[in-house]
Image 1: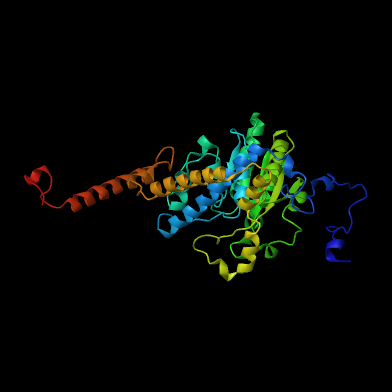
Image 2: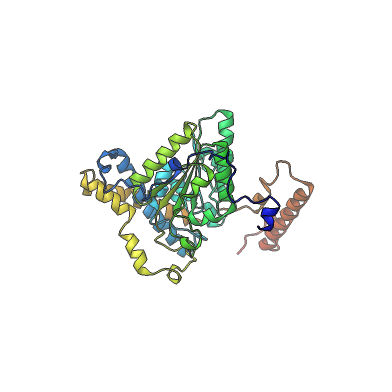
Length: 390
């Protein structure tokens, strides 16, 4: 008998009266990722939804390419491309009602744009500005979250508060597979399940947390299986099948809105580009792996399905691509304008009522800026000089 057994702190089996609180079987995800394309479900997919998904995916692919180019031109500090993950991004935005909230991670710029946020404002944070770039309340989109998984507890808190107030609101929180290794992930899912908060957690499993493969993060059969431990349903979906992702997320949103509580959705996808423009992905994965996933490209899959059903022709493809190019041109032109910055803005939005120390620092900076301006103007300038500067 071990020391713990002697102290009564360890029981090898539960007491006779113990019964599981919930039957785990209905919570378990499917053995294989859910798919629409290539199955009998494909013909039932809504044509208008497929066309809208296609237009947004093409625009998203072009947005990724243009933003990546802007980093090379020094117009963006960093850009985490979501090329290859466009189906997850777009579907996440399109399943939400206007009153719902989206909680994105730093890679989810396409979801933010598809939600209606200005493409330039979406990149403001990644440009190096301390502000979010957009008004979260106007668009019901939380700030892009750079720390891993910290947006998840925020999503739960907002959804729980909305439910207490009687508001018919659902929060959809997006996170990568690396974020599931963070404590915030556990805390968010645990609270959401206990409170039955109307939250949908979308895990985009793109294979790597920067350079760490999923196999070195977890031994679980899938990330969707983690849902069972918290007492919520887990869903597994092909993340490159836009129709399947939209259907699974729409089901989860309806379930949450009806009072059924949270759902964890794992979308199996792939990050075709490097983690960011500062990453060298060739150091931890081979070209053959990338090429294999390019054969399961979300844009090509959807285009093939639309063509098969007679819902897409050359004219429509050309029109969608023209719209995407127009968006990219506008993004490029506006990002090439230098922002007008006022150092005095540093003191705004720090406290509701500025502290004496902050007021002192503000006046100190104001004096320094005035002195610098006077120094740059040089002696004998202005009306006192009585002449024109040459």
